[in-house]
Image (cartoon, rainbow over all chains, first blue to last red; front, top):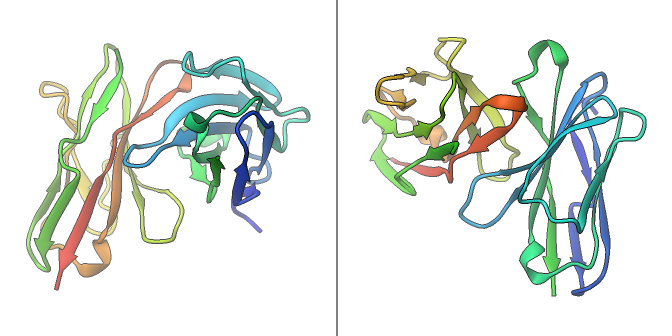
Length: 114
Length: 108
């Protein structure tokens, strides 16, 4: 598989539960981005990594959100104590350092918080 | 503040008609502008970027710094162009800002 892979594709959870999503970027892509997309809106930047370093994080991201990329390959996004307002599509994208602004997107993880 | 505005939620045109999807941006520096497209049941993908100055699938977009616009144009729309189109801006610290998208519907 040469594309960006995200798992799970769908997640239904109850309010207050923790959830974790995984993103596997295109191999050898140094940069990895997380976005959130709600209905009728474009992707909203959450955070990005260059290799294992988290270089930028949106001020909109509450303390309940945390992202890691421990070995500079796959990344996880965890949401603690989920709220109904967290319901959205969570997108991951990766890019190569040499073409850093050409992002390749995954299919996303759709989160529904009941 | 950085912002990307796509004023049209939906744009319907007939096959063969010209199409223009509008994008305006607000940014204090020198941004890089992009158009992304999402076809039905497919993932978001890059269509074109302003620094490439190329035509992709017959689409072109010119960055107008004076009007802070980056409108997407195609002289003759095709049915397979029907999709969601997002304008995006890359600014400081490699953060990306997306517009809310325009759904293009090309009627036969």
